[in-house]
Length: 264
Length: 264
Image 1 (cartoon, rainbow over the protein chains, first blue to last red):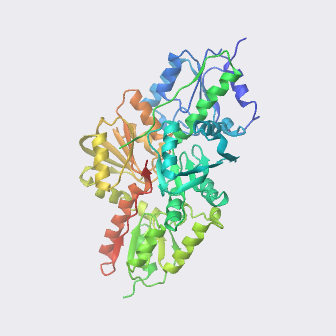
Image 2 (tube, one colour):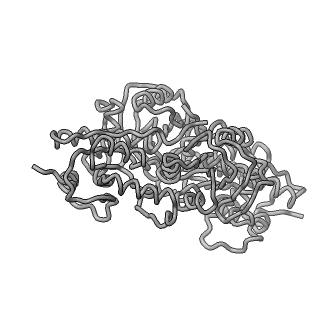
Image 3 (cartoon, chains in turn cyan, red):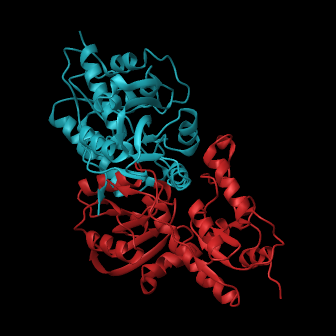
């Protein structure tokens, strides 16, 4: 039986129904194209798209968009040579590219979070999956020990930490992607009695500064910032595993990217 | 002659006129209080407020707000013990706190940018002050050399870099604070022929990923991320220097904070 791009998209959206104004869309390609192989990635970089071609796949499912904008705004890229060259590369690749973002977050539990918790091998410590955060109760470790553990498990070269590295932690709030904003993160400390929040990305003047004041006032709170891609890549790796179960006869793999930042 | 808090505020706003809906406001204290001394800082942390008291000053002028929110939203902090303790600390300090943000950015050139360029000792290399960015033409250095130079000049422990560390640079775009968004930063590369952008903070999936693709396509572009506070502290230090000229008989100093993040 022929499997088309649209068949895969339908299967991915099926458990959720329709989300109005979702950013999820087939950003390139023909929905009726026959699937030869599927790749997943966090970001559809030029390098990732070339890898998809090399492995003989023709559908790339990514979490973020093609052109450095959450809302697919390309207005600022008019006459930009990187934009022009990337569009040519995409066109020549003949790879269909689907952005799977809002739907994957809306799975119960959030597919990105499931992948992150699995990568951390913390499944047994999940206390509650909330819509935007997961509460974990782990055996006591210091912030430093957790930072080292998280780096090792996720294979990332560094994390940024606000607060006291020696503080003992058992109650952790975990937030993937750009969910580190104060409005989401800060109330969790008090409401959930957290010792530590671990998030992907958020404004530096919000949660990190709350933690700074909390520590100054004698409270052992801390924050570990993973990086946006670092917090969501495991969820797209998990998506590849999940697709293998649904489409056992199709070659499927996850493509990782190098960390976006080096620390100097 | 008695100098009041309001006199200082009037002097600071005088060159600009009124900015509608500015976030700048006297967030605590009595505008009619007599000034004993002035301190400036990037962020009014608990530690900074205690330092103001110690030095015998009673007006603190900061760039960011008191409670981890650009728009002074305290709704999420109801019943939060850190919020309650900080409010008590502020009340007992009897220090007036003025947030000087939009007005300082609106100076010609932007006061925050002037402080940053001075701290970097790059005054002679300024090609153009645009409203949100300053274009610099420096003697050729690699990205790595610039990163090390910037760290040394600003006294910061690390920067994050996207792109090729060995790329030679002469044309730099410098953006302070949260001006690292793709809509502001990305077009500068092409429009200004930049080799390198240096900014405070911005979304990780925008400019850093543009640079990643650009480098993959053979273009020697790079990005150095200073950190939000790291990019704006020099502008608040410069404000203290500037105030000393206007109010020569008042004790005035800048209060620095520790970096908000440690890298682990």
